[in-house]
Length: 246
Length: 184
Length: 184
Image 1 (cartoon, rainbow over the protein chains, first blue to last red):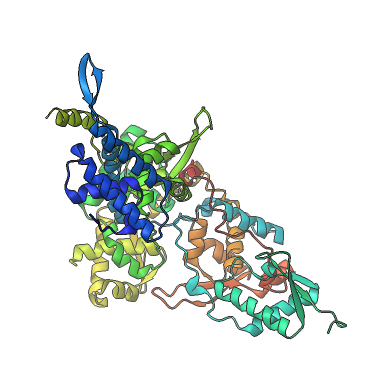
Image 2: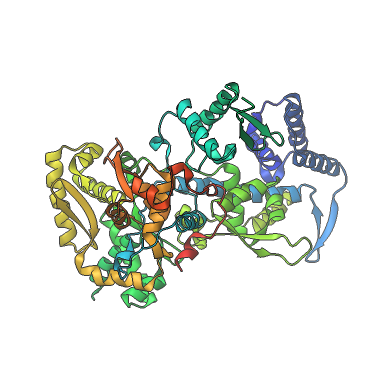
């Protein structure tokens, strides 16, 4: 019997098992273990055919199912509970796990709904309460170190979770090769060597990175620089050619 | 100050503060004791809802915050197009649900319930500040203990962890039902 | 949308906007014509006053802005005394550093990064000629775009903005303290 399943949907063996049970409209407390085991194995075969990676979790579950299946054929084990002898069903443990997992899956669904609602709320930033402070001359002695400390403090404080910032629309739209070449030349007029990473700043957009990279290629072609890399994917050393090299 | 005026000032304070404000701080500023304030806050929240004001106050644990109504989202988005809402994946939500109900909990317990490894999901949840490390369990391997945060409550509009949707007590139920079916 | 709902949405819009909002922008967002809106605004302002809400709307020319009541000033001032305001020792410097590194940038983005409104700081920086308006962003509300000036470069001995010292990437530093503990 072949069983068609949508392969990517399952988050793991528990998820798959639960879906199989749901589809069959089976009582979770009385799982027909033969049928479910076959379907589970069919699914794994299908994954194999599709060359999908079968994680060990699926294999462990398959083994568990087969073990339960074989135990079902044997006479039931018995145990004493409160002085009464009861039969142990080999499916017991698996059922408990499934029921528990299902409960959390349902909760996750509910949480998803509240998440959608709450994500539609806007809050506002705090008002600047420093207006109540005694006026001090904040910008007294400005130096670069202070500026750097300030931005680093902000960065380390920032929970970059929800915020909100879309700098895309603010970015300049084009980065001309000429501009980038100029900027590289200025750098190289001050020192003979510059790292590619040094050309980029926090504000650098993807387009700008590409523009810089193309500029380097252009400068190499023009033989005004040569480039070196210590290893693959490492930073690029951009080195100015000296007069005699030209 | 009469109660009405207290409510009015609270609106102003929450507006100015913007961020979540602790009831202790409100109590200090207003010189109203926490217990009384707590009931005033409840009334104020109800007032805003009942009168369908454009703003609402949410509460999570001891924090209060003023914000807009979720159902005004489409209008406000027209003005302020910057809000990017990244919702959680199903795997993260599943992991988060387990942590929320079973906290404090260690990873191997989460993995056992889900039947898959949860490392990546946990990482995402910590990054988004929905889950935090509470410490380590003093046993071999010293596994990390996880729990939910205040951000978690706010993210899902819960006043406290007790407000999580109820789930059946599966341990008891499964046992009972199971034995029952078994006897058939 | 009935009138009551329009009023409710307006509260939300003014709250999110923070700054003065032009009636034309409100009219566009709400799809209500200016004349009708104008009378609704008047009603809303009266409602807030009559009910002694903690917030009020002020109007000047064609602009509306929501804010606190002047007579709550002393209470709100206590909020500043009671709470450490997230180490805002140096609001102007902080604001300047953000503008320097992230320019061109609009005010709401600076606010979002700092978690505090930066009106006063920006004003100071413009007065000192370290920051200038670069233009306006063509979208609702036409927010002002800010950048640093030549004076800024000269002041810091920089030839160009590219010479600013390098900082670590914003996104790498995601781990960090927990939001609301901050407020304690």
